[in-house]
Amino acid sequence: MSEPSLSEGLATTRSIRNYTDEPVTEAALARILHLATRAPSGSNRQPFRFIVLRDGPVALRVRQLLADGAREVWDAKRATNEFPDRAKDTPTSRMLASMDAYVANLATAPVIVLPCMIRYRDPVVTEGASIYPAVQNLLLGARAVGLGGALTMFHQFRDAEIREALAIPDEAFIAATITIGHPRGSHGPVRRKPLDQVVFEEAWGSAPAWAVDPPGTRFTGGPRPA
Ligand SMILES: Cc1cc2nc3c(=O)[nH]c(=O)nc-3n(C[C@H](O)[C@H](O)[C@H](O)COP(=O)(O)O)c2cc1C
Image 1: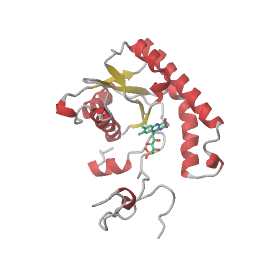
Image 2: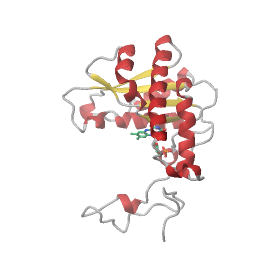
Image 3: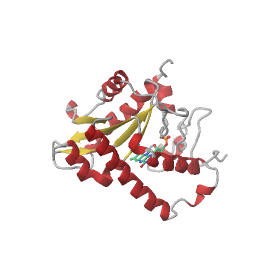
Image 4: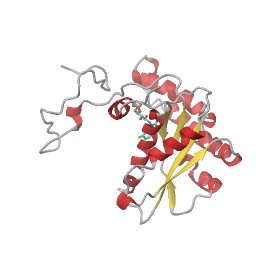
């Protein structure tokens, strides 16, 4: 399978939460992580580190911690009836159904990667700027080699136990939990808000006339009002 062009990859890298049993090779992992580490960071400090969870004893334990935390939080969310539309067949209800299955199968996802960042100063709101470009590169890198991934914050619910299990030093924090595998299903154009709702010029809320998505763009919230 040929790699997508850069712009195609950017426009069609969906969250992939369902995977086939095909293993992720070490060569693919090395390629994806190489691409992730090409990301920019402040002063090129490269404070990102990536912990890969496969099938070692510690990995299995951390997988279970992640799965337990995710299930606890997801069950609590479901119980609040926060998503009243889930019975209807909508993109949101489909996303929620895929979340249900995703959480149930989290412990056995083909590979899980925990991108971490080494803090080099006291926490500031912008510190994520030196890790999340690498996180997105990782997802795009997975797409490039025919894999798919999903980004979550599931580590938050068992952070202390996971840090201890993996001997993560105090100065580092886990920035994301990413599952990776061969997609069951496919990538395709992502749905987002129309450009004129998110691009402003001269003043907040003032959309420039040139802020127009290309023909065929798919939007969140159904068809675009005329
Ligand atoms: C900060 C952040 C947290 C997210 N948390 C979750 C999550 O807990 N579970 C999940 O399945 N997806 C999670 N996602 C993925 C988003 O749901 C997904 O990117 C979004 O719905 C758009 O769908 P798409 O990536 O398929 O275009 C998260 C994404 C981000 C950036």
